[in-house]
Image (cartoon, rainbow, N blue to C red; front, top):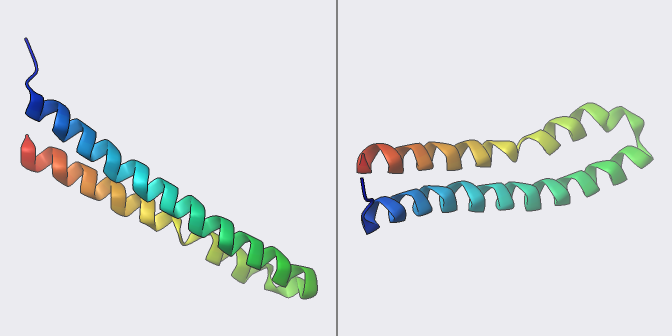
Length: 76
């Protein structure tokens, strides 16, 4: 069974949705992590807040996954 061009473009677009959201989350997490470590160096009791704020950008990847599933679902 041969695949046509539209099938490849659908797969590529869903991969781009996940990849760009993963890069954005990594970029945001790096900046937040640096600030959280700097804050914890001065006040150790900020560990919990720093940990929570470092994990929050991971939701961006979940949004990218939802968009990729929607692209695959609409096109399928």
